[in-house]
Length: 204
Image 1: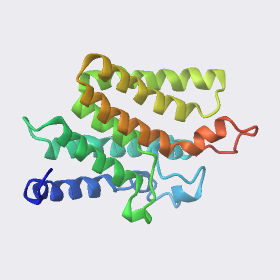
Image 2: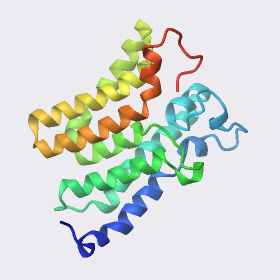
Image 3: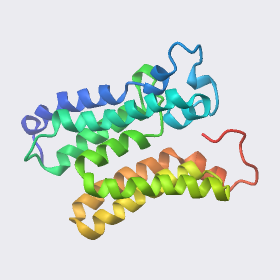
Image 4: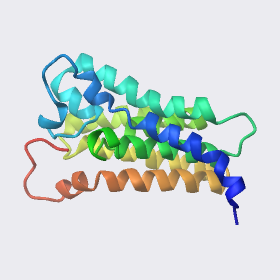
């Protein structure tokens, strides 16, 4: 069982990752426009909602949210550290994004920040998985799927998890599965909408 002395060196890096992840780039991206992204569209302070309002500023939100996951791993996960430590830093950044203290512990769905974490910990397998999201969005839009964004986002994470389960150690797939289940839970309203008879005016 881990002792306080073995856990305490992780506390400050984990807190730093959480604070880094909590920076609400969707809100920052809209500064100067007079638009509060939490008051328009779905009200979700994430990349997808910014994309509905302002495509150039959505790029800023995407780079910022993705970069939070990248930077958390780059700053704190050292060469030779167990992969579990990297996942802890990544989870801290994802939780910061989803439950930002700057937004009264609200936040985005966590997909972009999770992608940054995946790209840093498993660049090859994440690089294969990201196109699944892009293809899902394009096909879903053409076929007019309900909640094509949520399906593509969570679907790419499921694909990533399956790849790790097939080619890497079980522990790698377990961490990826925990992340994927959390992201699916964050999209629960989207999946509920899929099975409803009426499509909401603006999906979350």
